Length: 398
Ligand code: C5P
Image (cartoon, rainbow, N blue to C red; front, side, top):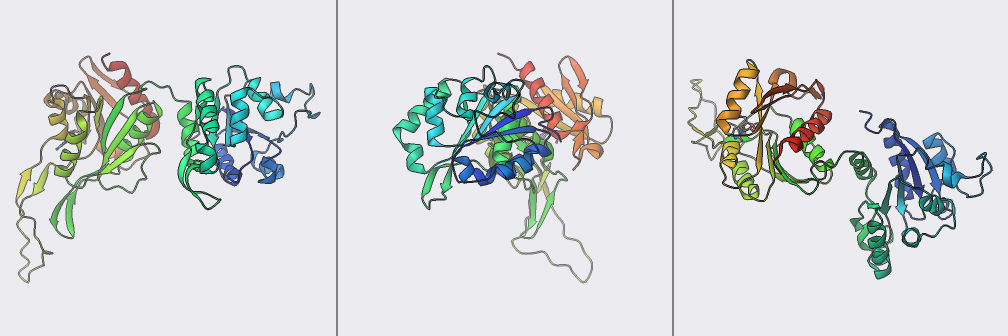
């Protein structure tokens, strides 16, 4: 999906070993449709060559404030006019200090001062002592106060052999931050709890009863909620999907596990979105040992008990979160989904046709609320998720 289509990004590289990761970032950002103009400081050219960056970006690389390839010789002005963002990665200690003080002694620092309204995102990368130094922390606080978005840094192994905070985010994480930056912050400061994926109910130590759910819709909603500025906890059954960047994932196997995990988190949440395909029944007579086939061909007799309804229980909490349910139906979607919304006692229920949505990359969602229903067009799940998040933000009280 071209999530950065029509976005023109001025990518600034400053001196740091993390420059090697930026080659990959440029390729992936281009895959998403971004057009990238690279500007490098002199220090950055010691870590990665302008030739590499030009070959990858397919555009001239800018190094010098006195660049006579630019007809008016004003690269420091021209480059950011019409750009959607300036993205500095890696951002060195020295460069952050320059930003904090408004220094303008090379092309990159000058265009940051001359940028006008163009947003500035900065991904610090440095040794942990440099990151923790009071001057660096002061400078970071200053540029934050000036409206700069700080991405990371992460903690972990550093190229110098030390371990701590100051690692630049990985290329895929930088990309997730850039994509998120362009999404409206309709859930800023909200805490969102989401369930996703299937639950599985043990029959014996090696067998389970489960639902056919890939988790893709719930994971896309978790990503979209995080992009919208929410703090997101995702309680997930077994799926093959990686946790969306910036989302806290807790695993739950059975419906009872998921019920307990949700009830422990629900009172701290503003919104609960119940996307998981929860098993309706669990096996009561779970065998401690693997059940064996018999010569007579007699199948084992399983006894079932109904699982608690997680969504309905959260909806009943006296000052619980604003609840959104899902209904995957194979027929009579309008009738069944509206009845389910009322039965579960939730203000918004999202319906889709199971045969269309299951394990698919796209889906058509129908939103049911007290005023009636509205169909969102069939689209990739991440787009459907972003539209759903906007619909939730519009409907939430206060
Ligand atoms: O009752 P049904 O499974 O059709 O309802 C679907 C909705 O209820 C989904 O939002 C699902 O996550 C939620 N649900 C639940 N706990 C159950 C069964 C369903 O939270 N035991």
